[in-house]
Length: 64
Image 1: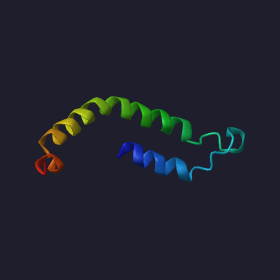
Image 2: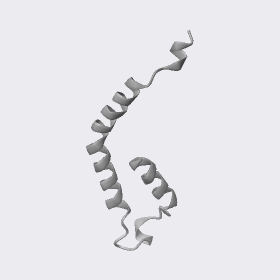
Image 3: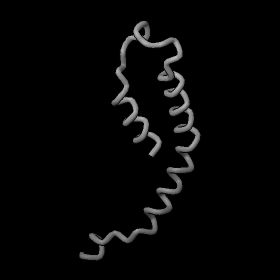
Image 4: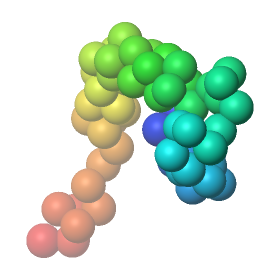
């Protein structure tokens, strides 16, 4: 969800050269924060997803 939200934000960002933006434009800081949070939570999120997928029965296997 973090990266989905980030992608929605950057799609609306004008992505203008820095010289045309206010000096306090938050894009660079926001990108650093997003990537930092992603790296921080990715391992735990991957474990949670793997555990959940291990509990879901593969219905295509049952049809064989």
